[in-house]
Amino acid sequence: MSGHSKWANIKHRKGAQDAKRGKIFTKIIKEIAVAAKIGGGDVDTNPRLRLAVQNAKGQNMPKDNIERAIKKAIGADAEDYLETTYEGYGPNGVAVFVECTTDNLNRTVSNVRSIFSKYGGSLGVNGSVEYMFDRKGIFSIKTEVGNFDEDDLTLELIDGGAEEVEFVEGYMAVTCAMEDFGNMQKKIESLNLNPENAELQRIPSTTVALDNDAFAKAMKLIDALEDDDDIQKVYHNIEATDAQLESL
Image 1 (cartoon, rainbow, N blue to C red):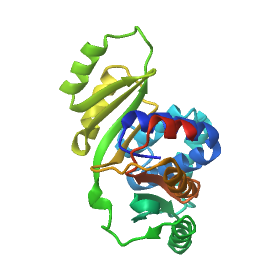
Image 2 (spheres, rainbow, N blue to C red):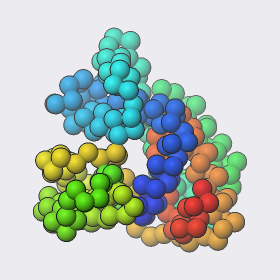
Image 3 (tube, rainbow, N blue to C red):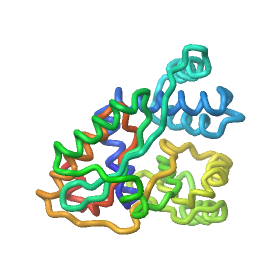
Image 4 (cartoon, helix red, strand yellow):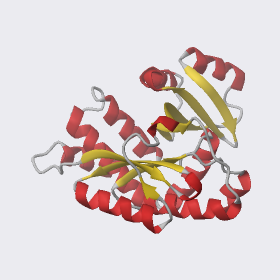
């Protein structure tokens, strides 16, 4: 689930990942494979691979799994993954943007279309909802209370390009512009902070609030999409209440 709130993202993503650890590992391995095949297997010279490995470590993926994924990706028998996106609407006009990594486009589009249809949504054309989302860098960092001064750290991060820094319940969410993502990553590393997750997300510029019944229906669509092995990320523009998030 990826809505507008950085903290909502952290809280829901952590719960979902704890419940679906195997699927999360599958998606991370795909990202490692694509990154290594495109830019090579050296994390020091391949920023995308370095980020994928960092996220894998943040999810406690075993080191052996990471190394095998890289080795396989740069080998002669590497799988040929393609990256593609789909856009559509869920129940009550919820905008949904889907990012996929697949070895079979026909299977993926068929599955995505079927999920939208089954859960009261409709698959749209490219560009139908993309304009509703801004690309932002989001870093989710687990913090230890008392190890730093929040004000001083916030100023350091803003100096490094952060647009927003939010501290909630043992986590820090750092937001930056898409073009500042690399510099922000270096700044965070220089401060000896280790993000559990760092990625470019699509943040909705406008959101929709739903009653509880409508929210439950929309989330059935979101959950079904996130459960598909070909789908890496799902973004939407639901403005969820704390109670609705807790219900998940």
